[in-house]
Length: 231
Ligand SMILES: Cc1ncc(COP(=O)(O)O)c(C=O)c1O
Image 1 (cartoon, rainbow, N blue to C red):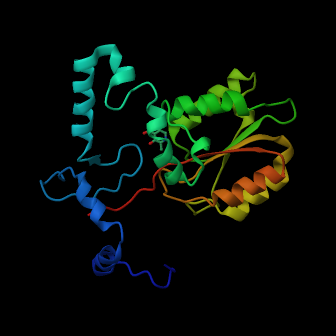
Image 2: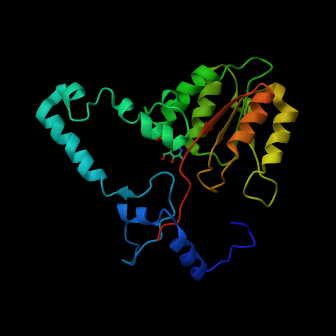
């Protein structure tokens, strides 16, 4: 949709809902009530989304398998626990547009960030900066700062947080490219969210990855769901 086609207001929002090919998925989730007991507008796609109606029965099923099999559930449960990442491989690859051999589901996000940075953040005395967006998720920022210290550098100087232009909430891609171009020799790692958790800005990941890699920076992109409006 172009900016000209957009109309603020409920009628327009309802008309868009009518055309939404994903609208039926709404019925697969449990919605909390608003404070006055009415229907709730749920805008949180980050941190914790809505509970799928299937979540409780699936968890119950695994608890039953645990009761029935104990430790043997690792190997003999209906969905064996030990190779759980294999069970999730195909769907995850489809979700992120990668090949099955390129994805693995494991750990929590922050643990994975640490594991990735232990391997891919290779600072030198000249090239030690990590670039993130200002307003990155707090735990991402803490993990980056820890990794900088862990590698013997000081976050005060080695962490760069890209700021939007004054009066703007989102970063402009040409500004990110310009920054990479001018400071590439200092940047060891460029790590942005695919979608910023608070503004909802979707970054052009391909463009940013290309800009960074052309200048020799390692590029890391964290992917999260985009805040959605559910009604
Ligand atoms: C946007 C975002 N980043 C990072 C995290 C941290 O994830 P984890 O607790 O899996 O380390 C969360 C968790 O809610 C999140 O919503």
